[in-house]
Amino acid sequence: MKRVWQFTLLGALLCALVALPLTINCQPKETLPPAREKGVLNLWDSGPITLDPAISSEMTSHTYVMQIFSGLVRLGGEAKPVPDIAESWQRSDDGKTYTFYLRQGVKFHDGKEVTAQDFKYSWERGCHPETGSQTAATYLGDIIGVKDVLEGKATEISGVEVIDNYTLKVTIDAPKTYFLAKLTYPTAFVVDRANAESGKKWWQKPNGTGPFKLKEWKAGDVLVLEPNELYYGQPAIIKRVAFHLLAGMPMAMYEMGEIDVAEVNEYYIDRAADERGPFYKELAVFHELSLFYIGFNTQKPPFDDANVRRAFCHAINKERIIKLTLKGMMTKADGILPLNLPGYNENLEGLSYDVAKAKGLIASSKYGSAANLPPITLTTSGWGGNIPEYLGAIVQYWQQNLGVEVTIRQLEPEIFSYFLKEEADEMLITGWIADYPDPQNFLDVLFHTGAEYNTGNYSNPNVDALLDQAAVEPNETTRFTLYQRAEQMLVDEAACLPLWFGKTYLLVKPYVKNYKLDVQGIPTLSEVYLEE
Image (cartoon, rainbow, N blue to C red; front, side, top):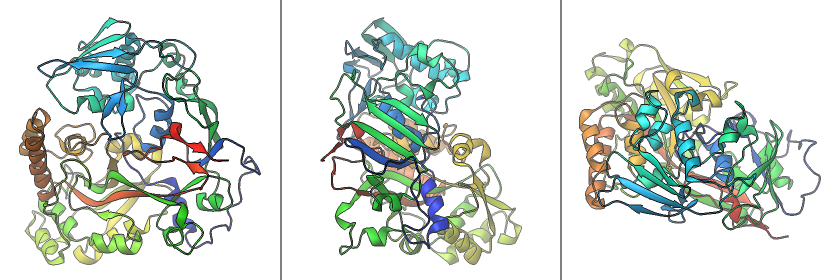
C-alpha cells in the first residue's frame, strides 16, 4: 500500500530498554486476562492513527483498515489484482475504460447493500479537498476528472459513471497496466455515506464491508475485531482478534503467554534465532517489498547540489551498519527497487562506500568544502530523544568521513506520517513498502516531478520522460527496461540514499495456524485459526 514505512514504536521503546532482560519492568496491564480466552488471537500494537480509508497512509492504520473495509479488487496470492466486491470486469480495446460488475447482495456491516453508487460517492469524497486525503491523487489520479475534484473545480468525477446498481464504468487518461492494482489501495475502498457523514470521527464506529468489524476500541488500551457475519466471502475462522495497545514489552508478553505473535528486532534476534533456544521453532521470516532510505531535500542547500548528495551516499558503509547494528537482519540496497520486485535490476551500479571519492565530491561541489556547507538537520520519526543505533552510526560516518555535523529532529509518528512534506528538513529517514508489485509504485510515486510522495522535491525531465513512457508501454520487457534506466539515473544523481531492503521477523505461537504477512507486511487475519 502506499504509505511511509516509519520507525516503529516498539523500536523506540527498545532503544531505551535494550540492556534489560526480557521480563524486567514489563508487567502486563491489569486489563489483560490471566489466561488466554479460547478462540481469541491476542496481538500487540500501538493502535491506528485513523480508520478512514481515504486518509490512511501508514502501516499501522492500514493493518486495521484492510480488515474492516474492502474495494472492487484486492491483491491475490501472487500479489496481482483479483475480484473482491467486483466479481468481474471488462477492459476496452484501447485500455482506457474499465467496466466493473459488482456482486449482488454484498452488505455493509449494518446490512445495507453495496451498490455502484456507493463507490462513486466514496471516490468523490476521497478526492474532495475538505477530506484532506494525501493519497487520492496518487491512487485515483489516473481517472478522468479526479484532478478537477481535487482542485475544487468539480464535485463529481467525470470519468466514473454508474450504469446501474451493479455496474460501474471507469475511464482513465491513458492505458496503464498497473491501474487495477492501484484500486487495491484503501483510498479506493467503499464507505457508507450515512456513516461517513455522521460526524468528523465517524471512523471510530466504522460501517465497513470487510471480513472483520470493530467490536471495541479503548484508545491506549485495547482494540477488538470480530468476524463480520454478513461478509460475502469466506468467513473468518477466528472468534475475535484482540490488539493490546502499548500494553508492555512485546517480547516479554510473548514469553509470558499474554500475546500470540511478537515482532523480533535486532535487540532480540540472537535469542530468537538460537537453534538451541526456546523460540527457534516459532520464528518466521517474511520478505518485504520494501526500501528504507534517506531522502534529500533537493530544493534546499546543500542538497540542491548533486555532488553533495553523492558525497553523503559514498560516505556510508551500509554493509557494516547492517552487520553491527541490525545484526544482518536487512539486505543492503544499492538501488531503489527491492529484491523480488518485478523489474529488479541485479546489474544496477550503486554508489559504493568510498571516502576519498566522497571528499572529492564535496570539494568539487559549488560549496567547495565541508566547512562551507549550511547547517543540516535530518528529520525522523520518534520521541524522547531515543535515536536508533543505526541512525547514530550513519550520522557518525558523516562526521568522521566528511567533517559534517548533522542534527537530528524527531517528529511524533502521526506528524511524521501525515505532515512530512511540510515538516521535512534538509534530510529525512523513512521507507516505502510496495502497495502493488510494480516498479511504478516506487520510481514514479516517489520521484516523478510533482508526485504527491516526492518528499524531496526531486525533479529531472529525463527521468520523467522515461517514467511517462514506461507507464503506457504494453510490452513488459520493454517497460521494465525503461524503469531500470530511470532507476539508474536516480541512483547516479543520488535522488536518495538507499539503505536496505526489509524483512519482518515474527515469533508465532505453535497453536496459531496460517498466520502470515502479505507483500505489504499486513497479516491476513481472516485466514488465521487457533488449534486449541
